[in-house]
Amino acid sequence: MQLKRFDAINVVPFIDIMLVLLVIVLTTATFVARGMIPVDLSKASASDNLQIHKELIITIDKEGNYFFNDKAIETSALDEALMQVDRESAVFINCDKASAFDPFVHLLNLLKEKNMTKISVVTKQ
Image (cartoon, rainbow, N blue to C red; front, side, top):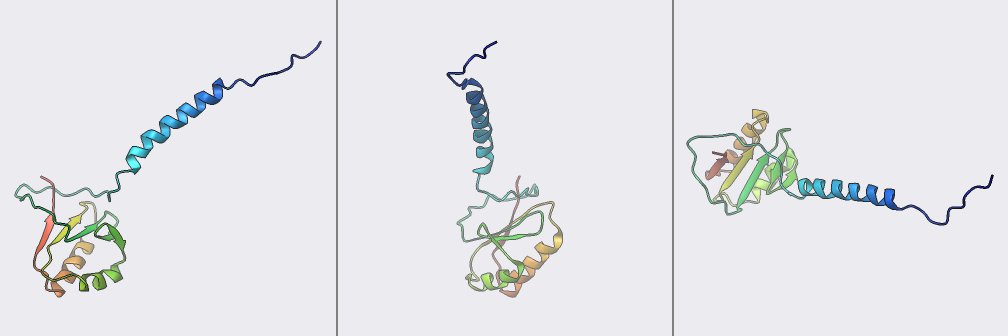
């Protein structure tokens, strides 16, 4: 008995696998490309629509991490960063509703020490 010689490689299974991988990559890329810090805001019925002028946005995520204008910042460096901001600047605080209350109180305390009075807490309607 003589074995049949393979003269060509069957590439159809390879193409099938590559197409499945391409679909997976394209669907996951849309979730990664958002470029935003995921924060689930609290709801408030009596809220005003504010125009954010990108003056100062401080975000607290659900783990209690601080973000200063969308850049992660350590708690110890937050005091120094606030010293470099004009005290007349508007401050917008985004705080995840699942976060502990302590980071929020700590932030408000720092803002009060710097005599910043234009403070807004961002919520969703």
